[in-house]
Image (cartoon, rainbow, N blue to C red; front, top):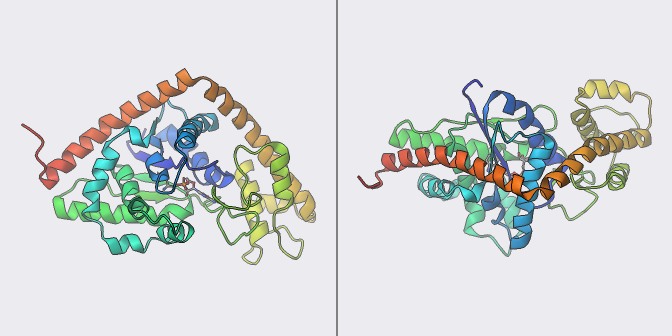
Length: 331
Ligand code: TYM
């Protein structure tokens, strides 16, 4: 433990994709060995788009089981559900008052989601980055390991922290996004210009962590590739570059090593190898997730102690913030 704090979270808003795995959870595994880590199920973020309540509850537990199945150790990290720590919402309110509407309107994800959910552009959707800033700042996180698509949100969390500190005196640690070179932006298998997403309408675009072996292999076989047959990373070969990034992430090899491995081999063979590698890696994770999910007593125990750990820290931060802004807190 070097005394640094790490914070990250995932929304239980749909089945996770290999993009979520490669861009986030996989990187948490090494961080938990060194740092004080908090990993949450961001269910408060999830309701900014309509969710089925029973499904949300089920997905929250399923996500917790997945974290553990992937190797996140609940003894080392605080693993908890965001809504169980009320200080997230409390801090968000205060931070709202140092955040400008214009800044929120400019957020890429807000613009994308507003387009996608034009019938439900609610206040929560716009306030999403402030809630995320509250998550991070509540724990005085130094590092926030996320995929590329979340960098703008971490940037705004930095701005908010700096602004609050300037106005009220040193309170928050200014966090930094931790983006891995490899796999920070896994693209859709059907349109490599788009990121792979939980909510893509095309089921062949995303590989889900819950997909069975045949489905995984079939999706990779159908993946969009490029015209010639060289297996190299290149800007004009986004499909193949994406598959190489996935293969490298799942094997722990560098992309250069992967290029060498497939030199002179065809796309068909390459796509099959990627599919099989991903399927082989996910099979034991899926088994373990099922096993953990069947032991509800254990799972509820983990989440209760995670929430308790998070609550202790969060309570201290909020009390300090309330003091700084001049809120009456009793005698
Ligand atoms: P979410 O749930 O959309 O995604 C979870 C994590 O997965 C990463 N990710 C990807 N990485 C690589 N390639 C992809 N195609 C890909 N798709 C998703 C995301 O960057 C993210 O790291 N707002 C966050 C959740 C959140 C959070 C936080 C994160 C809430 N509070 C505090 C960090 C700190 C989100 O919606 O992630």
